[in-house]
Length: 156
Image (cartoon, rainbow, N blue to C red; front, side, top):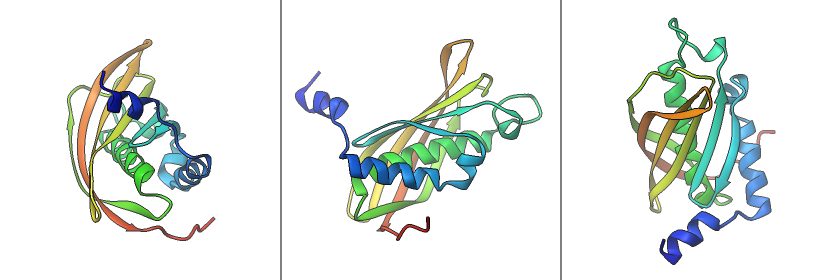
């Protein structure tokens, strides 16, 4: 592994930035209603987990496709915010998701990462895994483009 890759995977966020990111995440109404958790956040990367329950299900007992898209979108967005905050934040401009396996399991895990960060746009991706009987299976792959916007004042 190269030194740059090693530094990226072992780097940590400033404590104040990490708290700001967590505050922002906790203001996400849908994610809070679904009991999603920010499980890891490092420079340029984010992991979100979501336990299965009837609120996030569809008629066959799987995670709903819209929920899979939402958690992927949030993981990519918060990965971007690690590089934008505290000065800026981001809003989704577009994303493309491929659901490659049914969301059948007890937990979804979305792992987002920044692919390219610019002054006005950020491109990120996320892989979403479903955990079933303790084993992770790739469920979806997402790529997104995000607008960079000035950081909003906290509403909390």
